[in-house]
Image (cartoon, rainbow, N blue to C red; front, side, top):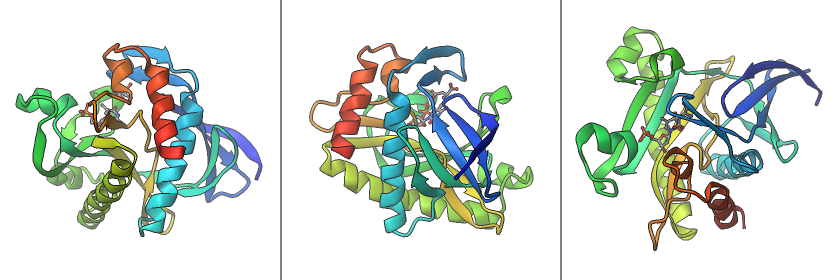
Length: 235
Ligand code: TMP
Ligand code: ASP
């Protein structure tokens, strides 16, 4: 598989073309940002951990019937994935109140929610990824009703699978963000990453934060938290 020109550079990853128009290579960086890029830093080793953890979760999910973009891990930081058009919605699933949910609704962090919840943000950095509902997403042609129904179904199923797996690792899955893509044939598949950058992981016993909140909130030992998550998930 030939790595050709760079197609895109995001805050945490780069995407490269290959000699197959249906496949691209994702390369994970150690760069970290928060608050829509206002806070910047480096988390040494993060790219390797996020690459390997994402791939582990993608395999686990695809074994449970979730279609994903994952094709093959190429190196510590590089993975071959199916080329998709990203649906411009951040799909956020929550089991426990934290982050923007706690702030918006005045709910103390750590409150177990009465049911898993789902929300969408419009993926638009210039607007700061505002919260958006399904009617608005359809009205703006960001996704069709059928696509939103499929994404919702997958998101809750992914929550069940990840929660069960992480429980066995001694980790509480607080919340996470997913992105879906559309293949050239119109199929909706899971894309992007599932990592400590995009999930809240708490130690089930102590409640210690083992995710990017350590960077966002200047809690220290950011690298150690990523390494601990890698140890728990990847062994
Ligand atoms: P929030 O509580 O800040 O809305 O975050 C919800 C989840 O989404 C949390 O697990 C972190 C993740 N997330 C991202 O992956 N990217 C983002 O840009 C933001 C704001 C949150
Ligand atoms: N990645 C996001 C940003 O820099 C924010 C976050 O993950 O908190 O905009």
